[in-house]
Each structure stands twice: as structure tokens, then as C-alpha cells.
Image (cartoon, rainbow, N blue to C red):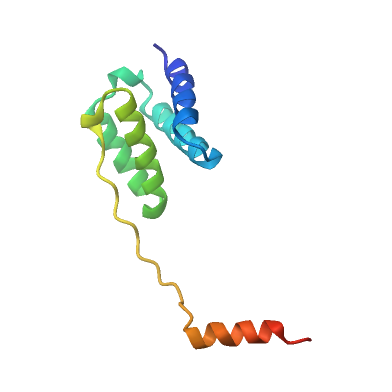
Length: 116
């Protein structure tokens, strides 16, 4: 079976499994990009292929974006019966977000109630 046929069947599976369009779309697109990068029939994917792809995304994309890529590909690999090829999930990158204190939040809320 060609990858286009498998992708079409996988898309129908995703539509049955997930309700959110963004989840379906993300899984589908990342799987399609993975198959295009691997450039071989899905049934012939090897551990070496998957490891090379992970190396590629690690070098070219940010870690937090790779979590979705790996999740999508892992779901696909399980769906085609190649769960042994699944990749470990990358560690999320810590971000330095500025967190407001309760006092600061209340101050902003009060300021928003004042008339200009």
C-alpha cells in the first residue's frame, strides 16, 4: 500500500479517535511530513529511519515543538503495528515566564475598572 493510501486511512482513523480539528490536523500533517522525509513505504520503516528523523528534528526545531512531532509519529507507528519503533518523548524546554503575584494581578484588575 502506498503512503498516500495509508495516510488517507490514517486520517479517517484520526477523525474517529479525536474530536478537535487541530489535534487531527497536527497529527496528520506531522505524520505526512515524517513520511515524506523518510521517503519509503510506511511498512518498511526501520528503527534507523526513525532515529535519523529524530536527529533531524532535534537539530532543526525547538524541543517544545518536537513533542508534538514525536507524539504524532508515535501514534502513527502504533497504528501501523510498529510500536517497537516508538521514540521517547523529548524533555520540554524550561521557559522563563514572568509570573505576577496576586497583589500585582489585583492591581491590574483594579486599574482596568477605572475610567480613563
